Image 1: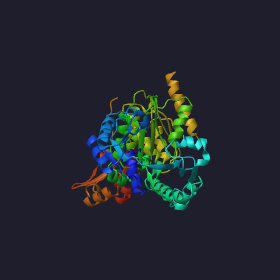
Image 2 (image 1 turned 90 degrees about the horizontal axis):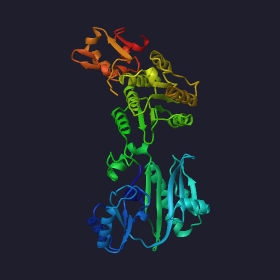
Image 3 (image 1 turned 45 degrees about the vertical axis):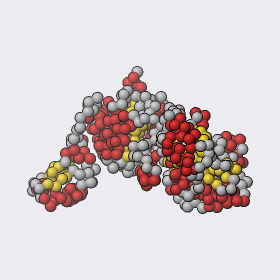
Image 4 (image 1 turned 180 degrees about the vertical axis):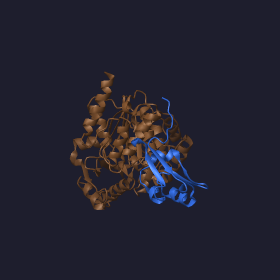
Length: 405
Length: 78
């Protein structure tokens, strides 16, 4: 989940990291009031979930409150990359001595958060890391253990920063790392972290991205502190009817989990898939064997029959779907017979023959004998763990392509 | 694509008298069933048909009721 800059600033503030006196405004008059309070030159920034604000004219400087109001009025009407701003951030124009870069980012390869620090802030960190790798300090932190200040200090010291700058920057990076863990972030970035003329450090801009799966347990932050409404999902695109319906089915029943995405999918083979990374593996396996998935989905956590049925029905009712493939890695807590009941029921309720509609059922694991008995009864082709995910996906693709031929 | 809701596709549950009209047993069955197949009423146990296919075959109802008075029928075995 992405955050607007004014929200990211609030999160940084909550973590005890110094920020400038800023204000989020939704009208030109509010911007004038904030500029009056700041009582000095200000910068007005468009609050859109998009990059390229500066180039698009979404960042303006003002010397007086009236000028700030004028710029705010212009920016509030300015569309950037197809997005209208939620408001503007009015921020003091800081007298900066030096800009730094600090962040904590999820390292998917190491499966640990990675702390980063550079004394070349305010610019593209990827560029700095590529051209001057020694300018960037980095170190992984534990997912479980507390973050200690010395870990942050080592990262910063590795770039050659010493003295009071090192002592002042250290708690900021350490707090950012604690914030990252506490709020289940995938990215927590302050760029630039400014050293002001008086030697103090403040966060001038921040970017935060929270793990989608953590939204449920971060209600205190999202609803109470940031006042983000539950339906404010921050998706990059408008959810389809399929996605909305699957989400509603999932939310209506606490048993198990289903997810469904179809943005960018136009295929004829519906997927009801999941289990420990199985969704990604199986989607790739279908694609790499020439199949055209109609959706991406995840099912697991021992869903009810109704939930499995609901997902399968939604997939089957998508335009262009001719068959579904029901495939998972080996399951332990999700019951094979329950999923079998669900997907067969979906076919029956839609007036379809399960034997013709389910291209393959490959879910080995808990209660598989019971499941296979049900599948036998309805003539559905199934396979056990002796058939790999790759081969099962291949069978489904062959079946649907054979039919097309 | 038209759609209808089907019940009792995979599982049926039968309960014999006098167990069916035993109000104390009805309450126990309602408590013990994890998927809500049994509802306690003034007349005894009422089977909730929409929940039948959710039966997880835990047999807790069979263990709670007098021996042989409840039968879980797997319709896919017939």
